[in-house]
Image (cartoon, rainbow, N blue to C red; front, side, top):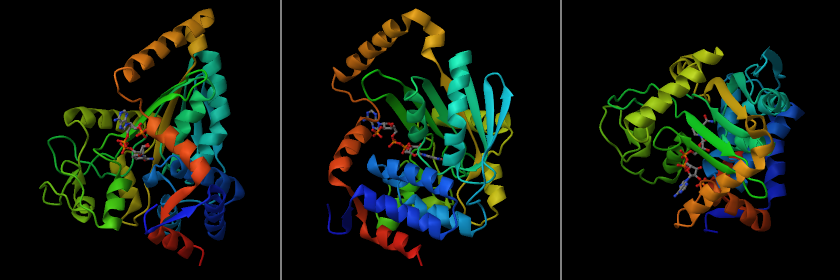
Length: 338
Ligand code: NDP
């Protein structure tokens, strides 16, 4: 623990989140869903998607760009397609309300998709992916954001940070999960560098004139870059398409237009796909899942680590020790109670 962080027990931080959300008029169902999501981020040492997000959530609410209490509306769109209209509220409640139906559809059809519409999505996608792998399903999820990221070869913000996540259930072990922004880094990480006054690495962003920058403020005012050049750029485009027009929702550029400079978090949709191994493999499921285990073994046996391993280790540690929160962040969060 460093001098400018404060160690908090998980229950203490959970209570603070609930108090802040309650103070700002969130319904109990949203308080539960949002707090659970924020705490998952903090506990797994994903600071950019932990309680820090409370600042953005309340800012978005106060800018009139989110509902604190809209009830999600579920629509059975097709045998393997489900839509959940979040009604302009934050995404976690819409996800948790739609999940049981997504699982049912995937169990029945072998593959099913859930489109969440009209939501403010602020969280790490692995939270949702792990809910799918817990049901024994393979999961994929993606969503646009605000237009912050330039396409490879350009310098003007167009794509969102467009995260993409995948999960594979592993009997008796943590699931295999990867979850990354298609930008070089999540925007929250640049914001955390701005807050701490630290420079950002080369390759994350260009300034407003299109020149490479290591200054977090210039990066936030310029354009972020995709990871992997043209490859990340193509993936970001795919996500704009399948989690935008395909599900009848906004692209990142349209989300930015909708915000009209209010500074709210992105407002758009999300596409979540679930696959049921048992419907693909029947009585051979266990045998094939075992072959997947051999693949994971072959990765770690050569000294590489599996994605999410860092998070799972953090989860075990913080359950024992609590979490360290930057004192300035805690001050800012407590100020939201006034
Ligand atoms: P990172 O680059 O930090 O990590 C990406 C993935 O790679 C993680 O699963 C991570 O696992 C894994 N990983 C990292 N290093 C290694 C390694 N050496 N070997 C194997 N695997 C590794 O993520 P990003 O900064 O791109 O994204 C952070 C989060 O931001 C994501 O959770 C994403 O969902 C979220 N996000 C959400 C948005 C939204 O609109 N809701 C927008 C953009 C991002 P581990 O965690 O264990 O290190």
